[in-house]
Length: 471
Ligand code: ATP
Image 1: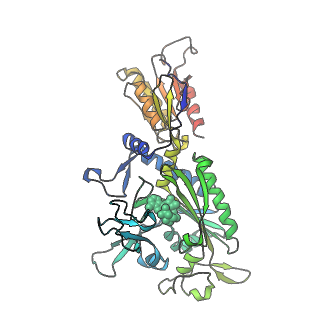
Image 2: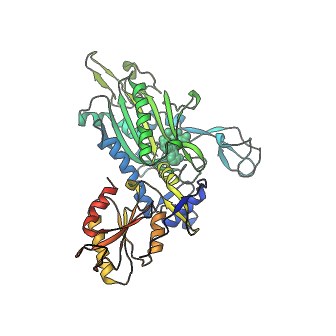
Image 3: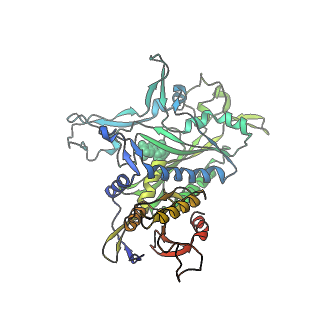
């Protein structure tokens, strides 16, 4: 088999959203939802490789936040939300962005996205004053549709954690400090969805609510900001592209005492990837009955509907108190976009050709290894490749793909573009005796995505070789 021209130098081209969108569509990462009907604005579907990448990113988060700690439990709460939850959380009254309408072309914009007082679509200055627009999706539940039968699609996963606080506490006997982690869909009727999967109307969040004693909250807030930046680095994001931004008092959400946003250098600019908020005792307090007895720092309104006090007991003082909450809240879709942005690389090869390669961390790669028989019509090669695929698949490192196209060059190009760390090629030397290998040994060629270096190894050594890539 002829070796590739492995000399390559990275281009210094700035990352460009169009290149990423084109790659995502071409290779099956992300599609516009319902595109055969013209799409649905701000809604995307994840294709065969996108779902793998997304699952890998969520699994990495779950491992770090739940399995590798001893102070966090998991949860999967419902998306359909009782309206009282979102009334007492303050979302009915305050979960709104100011928007303006263009009187000329009838388009609608977020007031803080408007530049120079002009409509982005037609350039008109004939705009309405800003007014609040509630971003929650309403729906009805049950067979009767009336004033009272409405519910919401949750705008954040957090509220399901707060309303289950007592259930988790009672069923696990946890003591402070401890956290509850959840990954799931959230919905916001964004006025202006934009920048591909960065701002969408249906997205996924990875949220932790970490409950602490009041007074220790500032310290825990700091710790979580550091831990979360560190985690994003482990997902391959460069330190230079990550910035911790402390929100100003005017920018804080209604529930927050302090919020640090982790910003990432996306192709469209430096923007929020994750927010880490000190939500104080706001939410647990708001969802508790008889709030006046609890000495809360903040509350939205007296709660007449809750049947529970979301408190813990201070045994020394012999009284109930409401824990404070630190919330690291990250977007899965923004995470996927950040990982792809960081990994996307174009290299000029020795022969002048451009190689597109996704230098994604192996644990996030949608396909861990491709097994390629050199000729698709050769039964012996294909058989051997199938058997190698089965062996590698059983290692449990993720998806192993049998790539039976018969075109080795094309296969390498494809697997570079989708970030497959290793290609295993079964060729005519595999089963024949040759001076390159010990007698009786069957060998294959393995090719490394980043260096394009190829080496011949025996099939019996392959599982260990592959396992090492992903540990
Ligand atoms: P932004 O200011 O960009 O609208 P936010 O501050 O409202 O975001 P949070 O309420 O803090 O966002 O939500 C936590 C995380 O959820 C964000 O850091 C982001 O990663 C993700 N997220 C929020 N809104 C969207 C959206 N419309 N599309 C994709 N991800 C989102």
